[in-house]
Every structure is written in C-alpha cells, then in structure tokens.
Length: 152
Image 1 (cartoon, rainbow, N blue to C red):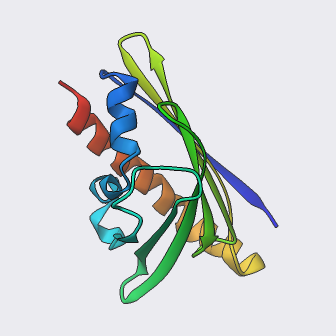
Image 2: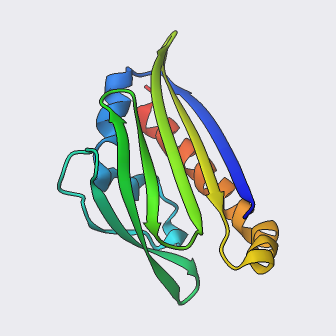
C-alpha cells in the first residue's frame, strides 16, 4: 500500500480561538468544500467536536457517482488540534491532522493528510490522473474561502 502525504499551511489575521470555533463546528465543513464535491453532512453536525465523534457525509466523486464517507474524530486537543480518520469511504486509508497555533499577527492552520488509494495499481493510476489534482483543488478552495471569511 502506497501512502501519499498532502500538507498545507495557511496564516490568517485572526485569533486561534476564532479559527478553532469555526473548525470545531462540523456543519462549517460545507462552507469550505467546493460545490462540485456535492458535499452533504448527514450526521454529527449538531454536536461540538469531540473524541469518538462519528461524522457521515455524501460526496460526489464524478457526475452521477456519489459515495458515503464516515470519519471518526480523534485526538482532540481543544483549541489546538484534532484528527479526522476515515472509517468507511472512498480511500483505502485517510488520516487528516488539523493543527491551529498562534503566530505573530494571527493563527496558522496546518493540515497533514496521509492517505492511500483503493484498488491497487488502478487506484494509483486514478491518483496520478485526477485524484491528487482534485485534492489540491479542494485545499486551494478551502484556502481561498477561509481567506475571504477571516481577512478583515
């Protein structure tokens, strides 16, 4: 199994507490997910982020192809970090650590995603042809939305 790594960092001119309040509210995921992903949070949106929380979603992989995605929230350090880990979904493996920390002039958001494709060599071909670009585009979209939301 080949494990890929995607890392992104963003600094916003607001307090870490403000960023944490946004990220620790699961229903806010919709606001930072590209519209073409067809993202729908089905369960877990009415609870504040906590260890063991199960979130279920529907996402669109391609036109007319939607799948369920179930993640568990783990390792919550309130105000600082958490992990969402896939339990069922489109990847063979998904581990996404979110870290929020104070920096001069604001807050840094650091994401590190370890993920693996299903279907062996066919999954790796799909990764090379489109999945990596789609993940990059998703994080670019998120970066742009957060910049608009939190830049004064």
